[in-house]
Image (cartoon, rainbow, N blue to C red; front, side, top):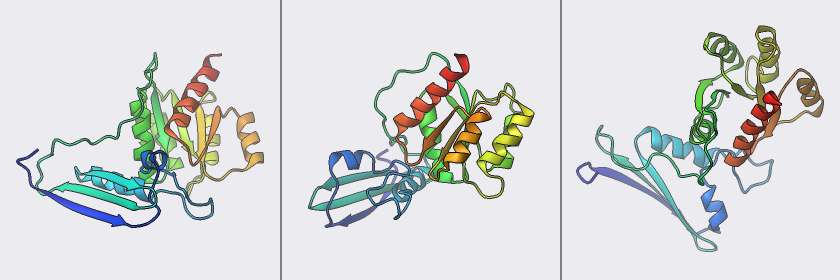
Length: 221
């Protein structure tokens, strides 16, 4: 909106830069070019979400072996500017049935980023920040969610603990687990109890969409 004053923050370096494939995924949650021991890759995803929360916009320009420049634009008034607020995803075929999906994760940036993928895949999404809240939201929502995407490692009640209590409320509760920390024995136990799938962090948007499709296919087969 040309009638609204904006502030511009520019951050640049003269480092190794990014190729096109890396640049396209720069704001994906959990994406990182570092080793598994160095971090979860939430930094730029968090910056994106902060900019969006302030009605702002962030762009990245990068050239391999020359460096990278990030520009963040914020409106200087409370009027909402006419700027893009959602990153574009590759065109996907919308599902024949719109699902209601309960997304459970204690990380704010993960909930927002994964929730955006769910919505852009044609489904509705509701949120819970903990295992305890997931139980409450699931039981209070009518009709009940078609699918639960459950983080495994959360403070307080963990995802597997919430799943076991959820099964006492609804033996058919459809749950897919999402986690960056994996235990093969625990996975086998949860599958034996009816878990529909597991998604390993870090993941791409397409991986999450595929997990949703596979879980719903498993329910109807």
